[in-house]
Length: 387
Ligand code: PLP
Image (tube, rainbow, N blue to C red; front, side, top):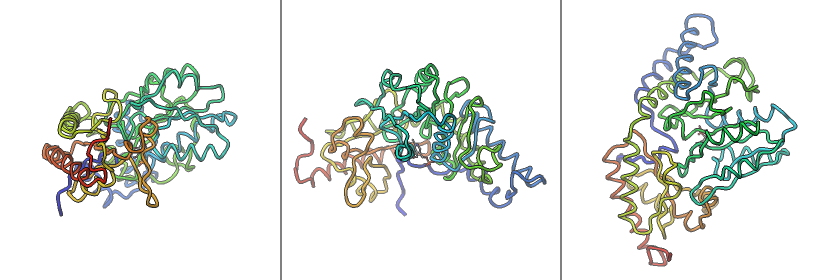
């Protein structure tokens, strides 16, 4: 099989070898139920609590503030419905126009159930107006729910400033930190954030495991009722995956200060900007995840680029999705005010710590060649759009 140059770490990540080492013996021998009282169960319970300690250390919170879930999407759904359950008379939710589909679909559903949703806009750099946020909060606002780091552009929202605004207005704040968790230092203690969602498979753990932080002072209502997770999330815990998540969190904490991924991303971006005419970075370049680069290539359809890059073994993402034969430009780039053409000409490259200098060199060679090939084939015959 042709070797893969994997630049899609915001979609998912490969399993860390250390995570696999933790998981395999548990899948084989550690089948005890953490709720059982005999030794096999008690050992499982110890594994569970060790994992919780590592995940809570990475989040900068107490162990009893972490609930294990099945994924980021479950964490988001749980946080939002818990916040809404607190006061059924509060029927207003604030979110943003650039959220992950997990939040968008949930809010659209809630809108059908009688909730009013305020979708805050972003500017051309993907940033929010905090004044607009403050002005949007009303006495009947049940919750503000928004991203920490955008999965498509990597743009960061200033969640600590947002928490301060939300605190003054006495409402609740949920942060979707699925992309930020493990990539940025996080300290939730006294942060003013009430709920925070994270996911294992974005930090080199397995798919099917997530975490929800719930501040201990918040009255919590479970989504899945049952006795596990102190009655906060029913269902026998996915022990091997949770243990792997704990290991992944421990490893992420060790790597969080490293500049390696940032250096690769910056070198990649500088190369693209100089080697490819009509290449633009999408999103604010200062307030951004260290691993993400979202680029537009004038005159190029991202779907075509994805196919040619895939033929060469390079994995990345287009912000657009092809459904029923039509390509929908990314809602994130559209919310930033981009034309359909520019949004459709965009690709996301996201680095991770298992990339190499070789991956960087290969991407720097391959992408300009693919862009040039597509431009040569384009009916307009002109590579770069008029200014
Ligand atoms: N939120 C963001 C920002 C994401 O990027 C993702 C996954 O891509 C999710 C939520 C959903 O996480 P999961 O795949 O664990 O359900």
